[in-house]
Image (tube, rainbow, N blue to C red; front, side, top):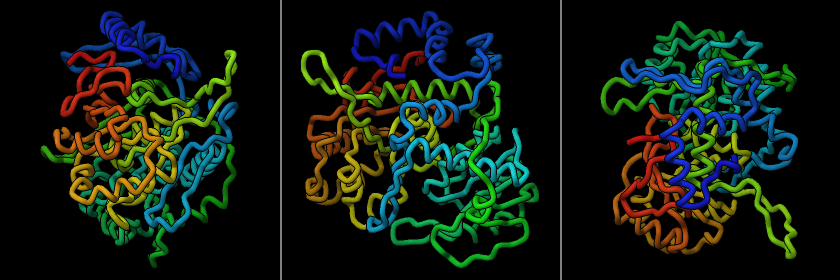
Length: 445
């Protein structure tokens, strides 16, 4: 994807013009950089009077081969996911691409052993732990459709989403940590399941060691994992096959189940991740006389939950499709104090940091010493997502976190779009307080 990274305003103008005048040629070239089992017959077919849009018709692929398998030759031992637990005293975990591939294939075999097959729907109601990302990718590996429900939702909200999607399986945990509290996820799930006749099996992850009952048709994650190996070939999917269902928040009425398909979603999330954040997976350090050496890839951190589209696109699929190192954070910005975000940035030498204006506004109310005590010299790009950012918060972010040296990308998009629609490109196009600025290539506002 680095080959398609925009590196100047002139290139942005040229690429944008080409993407609007000839979108088929533009996206065909980008899509060709991915691994396909069969090349598509038609790049784009659209009719906004219906509305109906189809990408890469006739093409066949599996998104996990592009997020995992294709990186194994050169990045097997590179960190794919850094897991930072809720408790700062609990050690962080690093999953290499090789290890993540193994975990995903193993859990994919667990799904198959429990009668999940291509096209089945799997609801995931879990805390922000590595197993959540593993479950998402395992579903995609075998062609099952995942429907992640934010672990802060009630049993009523969970049941409504399970039934609407007609989920055959539920994945949950005994509990989840959130700051100083433990959320009783299994108890909430059991209450929801009383009205969900479509669910045949529930798999439970042990995270908090909360005492729970394992009822009929319920099994422990760790016991199921012990029964299978890590050999799981990727299912062949059509580009327009369903990848996942994700429900909108319901803030404007009944939650709507948004469907994203395999091909177009993969290409767009990977492309926008690379360009908006200017992510560098392969740094070349000059040694003199044109000699260079490779250095460590950037470390990227999106603080969102995978229960939302931001987490799907810019914690899991977009970063991994680019061979990135992505941070997963279980906790909250206020625990054990309001310096936690910056402690994590220092600890993992984070280069790109992506969070919500709500979090920034909460953090700016507290002493700036909570920022200044940490070394944030590795930060290059700061991002915002989820709502407009006011000028005061933008300036605080710029002055105290970025020290006036970081690009700030104010991204506009939504669950329905799957990826960023309007944003500056870090260090390439101009950023401005309270403005999302320019449309991404292919987008006509």
